Length: 373
Image 1 (spheres, rainbow, N blue to C red):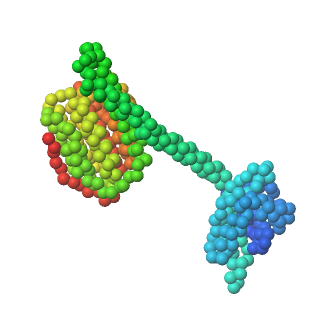
Image 2 (spheres, rainbow, N blue to C red; image 1 turned 120 degrees about the vertical axis):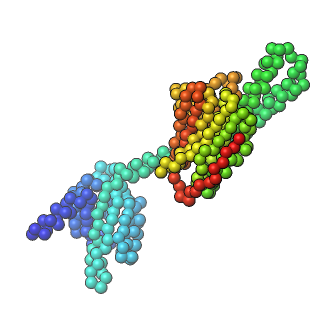
Image 3 (cartoon, rainbow, N blue to C red; image 1 turned 90 degrees about the horizontal axis):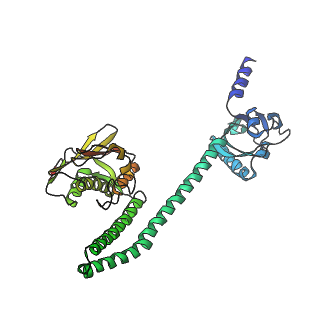
């Protein structure tokens, strides 16, 4: 009697509908715990011996064949089975359940009955459906952005090239015929057309980050930095020093070239001192690599630390300093893709240092330290 009491207490407190049924055409229920009442809204006693209704009758019609096939498969293989399917609640709603069970064998391998437990997973399934909807909405938005990039590339750049050619033709053939005010307006026209061209190119570069197919291979960042420095037009009064050895990481080489090209290029472009200095560093922080690109340039006010990473944001009017405001946004997007962080530390008049991190990856190595003047 005590053993039976322990058994019933255990069954009654398992969070799910524990059941035992016969292996016949109707899966006649021998026992099912009261948790089934919370799932389908019918008394557990209704199902025992199929007294009022069979369990098959509350399985969603579209799922009955699936349930039978999975149980039959588990019986053939003599392995436990797990099924997710829908049940019809008494109030007309649909509940998703997870059913786990196994055939209990008797002598000579015969099947005595089926034991199992049914758990309500409706909340999780609803969350999964909502997640799928959000993912589809996100894909739709991304597709709209790709379509926008296509429009920018083809429908806007074509007439802009025509305007640019016409402006250049007027500038070259008729510049001397204008008075000072006319020359000033013509210079302004040419500069604005060039600016528009650069903005469109910036939009395209930004839209392609994260959508273009990337090839992640071991990349020696020492070599990447060296190539970027050689590619940039470094004035003779600016010294660039790489102070630490860089690791070799599994990354997309082109993306890392974009990161260093924008950070080093910005330091060169904004340098207001002679001699100018740019320091490139790298530190092993245990769970990540921390990189830095610092300079002794004009510095940035703290109130602009977040703004500079926003697309099309510049700290000076474009008529004073030509910039698209896209470079740092591209850098941030690339670092975000790899799960890193980027930030700036700066003091006005003393320079700025941009830091970014990349997670530690396998197959890392150290390259050769060098300095470029």
